Image 1: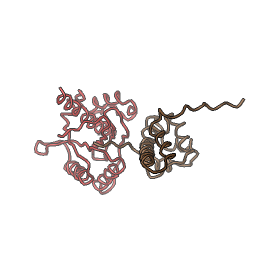
Image 2 (image 1 turned 30 degrees about the horizontal axis):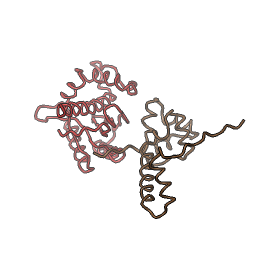
Image 3 (image 1 turned 90 degrees about the vertical axis):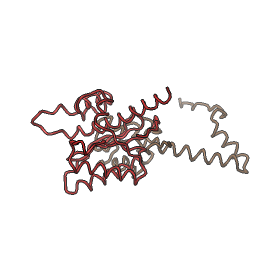
Image 4 (image 1 turned 135 degrees about the vertical axis):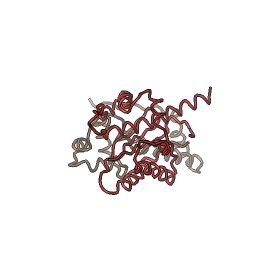
Length: 115
Length: 174
């Protein structure tokens, strides 16, 4: 049986916190809970700033809050990387291999803090 | 009943009542996603109830819809309207390509190990603490049934579906 994740789990996490839509709306700077309702009913996708604000409010990483969208994005990138590997562009193919096999990636230097 | 056990099976359980319907959505036996009670008290309650179930099915796209099984010949304590409504839900699920399963009250009591609705609600509120605030106090004789109990009836139906499915799979693998 094919399993699909819901586009987001905002309603679940809000209910777990026993909060109303208007409470979350206030923290997001909205006047009413209409926008929250639309996010929860999957009829509207929040912008990046709102996504981070929701992450702060619910204390759950964005990739878990928007699990279905995250899975879709992963699938799309993997599909494109697969096409790139089979394609004629050698540079693009080697980059796509790095995407599909994260263990082959070169180690990244941690960002240096500004004194 | 046909069981396909999947740890992430998406199950929607619905329990209609005279004043609306309770619902619970699970992704696997321990992951309660959504729950609530929809008040439907105006005219054309059946039409509104069916429309609401259609909305839930299209929004969540569950794998299975679980409703209560009844035996009309055995004097089920349900109104004719609710019995017809359950059949309407099954037909809506069929049209949406969602498998519909019916679970009897007897099976629920056996799976949850509780004798009445309120004992079942208390047990489920302990298992899913996020639903605790919806758990109604035991009904007094002179009071009508609290509508919040339908949420727990729906929860119990879904939990029973998972419990029976798990036992079925265990017996197959043993």
